[in-house]
Length: 328
Image 1: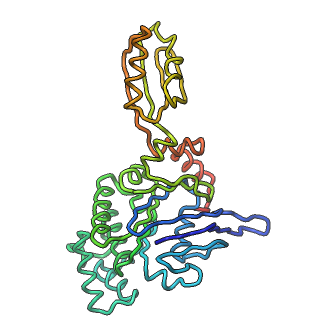
Image 2: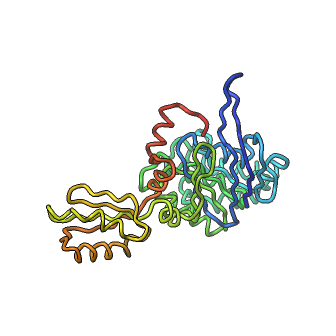
Image 3: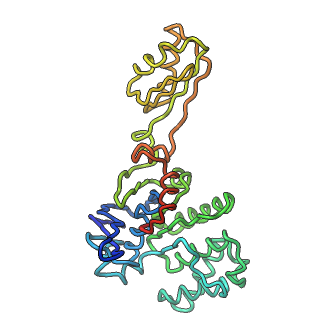
């Protein structure tokens, strides 16, 4: 569905300054996949999406969407995809049903087909009771559902969602995603998602692509990334005065890393925490070290980003925002 090779985008800020927003991204997305793209503000995520949706032209490299070249055949690309950007796309003074109907006509549907499609989406996204309401009167969650409906009105094969749930409360986020996933199942849509909510990527995406400084630095399932790049953390505490051999015991575990002994507390990273923890407890008991507590902490995608870049994703977002970088 998507194939890019060494895709780049430069923005000339002045005669002496050029921002290299995207530095050679190669990426493949298969039909039907739900792929999450993660990275801090300014990493190049949104710029990449804007190139793939033909909103801006690449500086170099190639990209095909649904079999069509984004530079040579932008019109054909647009017919195959839906795009839900970070801002609301509907006119504030328009009625919900009118916006959907008009969007359908713009995409080339005849009046009957546009009306039918509008009715289907109003029903599917639970907007039917809001059909005659002005967009300006909708809540944030209702507006985002309308944005998704507008992106789907022409029945695209591919849907781009650029931070679709940003600013929504947890209940509205969950509600929006319930609708998106049902629509994906109903229409067999391929979805490419950018998000700052790591739980969304972790629980819903089949693949996670991590982008930083305009490059792909990781690409795999969330579970594989967490296992390979972060690992589980074991936390052991012992009775005071028994901590002597703790670090030596932990270092004997297969694949143990980041071993830290601090007083009566021991932490260690391993690939398989549930399997390694009994081994560590047994070794402690055999060496006469009484264990007080033992826990396994499963890694998060933020742990993955920390391992890859030396900073957490939240920290990276904050730094990028405060620096005012507009390369996203």
